[in-house]
Image 1 (cartoon, helix red, strand yellow):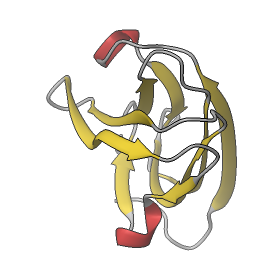
Image 2 (cartoon, helix red, strand yellow):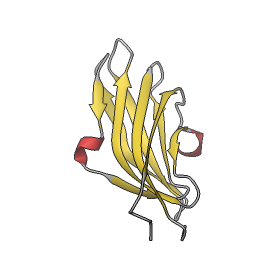
Image 3 (cartoon, one colour):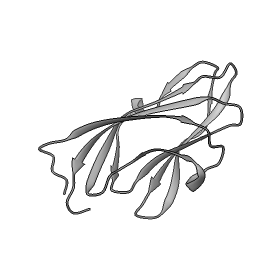
Image 4 (cartoon, helix red, strand yellow):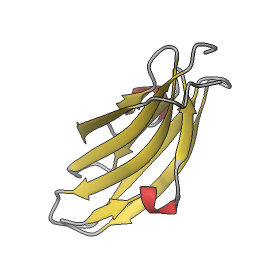
Amino acid sequence: MPDLSSSKFTTESKTVTSTTAGASADVIYTVPNNHSAIVRYLLLSNGTNSTKKAYIQFYHKDDNDYHHLANGLSMAGHSLDSLSSQGSLNMHEGDKIVAYIETGMTLDVTISVEEYYDPNR
């Protein structure tokens, strides 16, 4: 059980260049050893002039599998999209958020998480 009495906030941001899913996608965030995390904010920014598709996946370490959070999200040129408006996502040690893009897209992804020490992980 995580220690909910204290937490640490972490923000990561990455420019995505990968055009391939799964293990070849760009890692945006990985939950550290002995921690659990709650995704509080996940923002996508299309820096391209035209409409392109973005892909965000959740890697679940427990089943060693990737699951789409955004599967071909069509984003107009120079637009933003927040995936965090739908609620929070709970993650555990080794879980990851990864991203990949349609060819020709410039995508920046920013994630903010609240990390909790979880000695049982």
